[in-house]
Figure 1 (cartoon, rainbow, N blue to C red):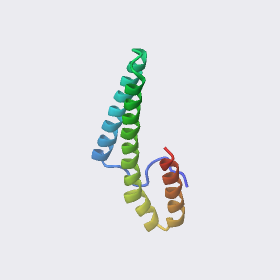
Figure 2 (cartoon, helix red, strand yellow):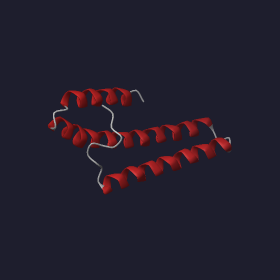
Figure 3 (cartoon, helix red, strand yellow):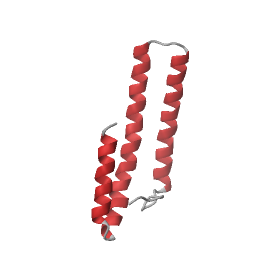
Figure 4 (cartoon, rainbow, N blue to C red):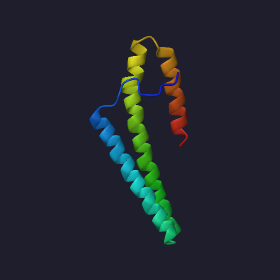
Length: 98
């Protein structure tokens, strides 16, 4: 059950929040690139990588939350509960590996 778009579209505010967080992560990654170019201390680089990973995981959780609260509920109400639950569990397993 693959969809090109969310079953329930994100609100403008949700989209804005996700994009803002992703822009911050992008800035963090650029900062890490600069640290590597400047041959900065490895531990400092690793700390920043950890922070970027954490920030990206928070974005993922925000998207996952929307999916569970809106897309999954909507699909279940429309008789697609088995398919959508299988998809949700699969994505949670994949997301938790990171």
